[in-house]
Amino acid sequence: MQTRLLAFLAATQRAICSERSEPRPGSGWDASRSVNYAQGLARLVLGARDQDGKVSPLGSVLLQSFKLADGTLCLKAHLSWQESDADVTRPIYAKPHLEWDGEAAQLAGAWLSGPPAKVSPIVQEPELLAAG
View 1: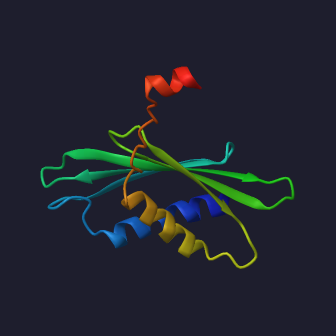
View 2: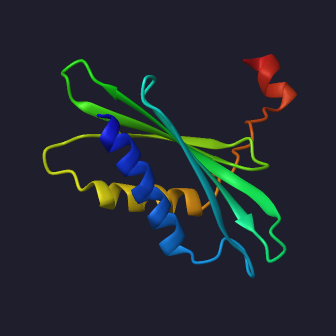
View 3: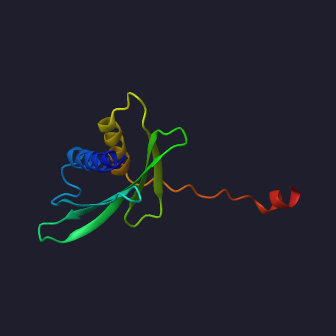
């Protein structure tokens, strides 16, 4: 289970960096990975390194590995972006014919597309509230 955790995190990082060669024009990727096997957690922190070596944080991918009640493996991916309150959580269920690299590419695409647009709350007219 832990091997899949680190391998999937590395595949996600490769997919992100291969899909977009530069995080920002004139900059390169800066990535840091950490894994806690005892807790089944892995984190990929991504940033943009400019020509002067300054790193600007861009966001992260957090993976949690656990077994479901039926004993199958599940990875929960939590995507977050710097300067955004929005985040996305996606489960990845280990199925017999699951292509892990394809799942990593989909996760990379979701992270590269950026945070989801915020949905504004529904505002009701005061007359409708009083009548209801």
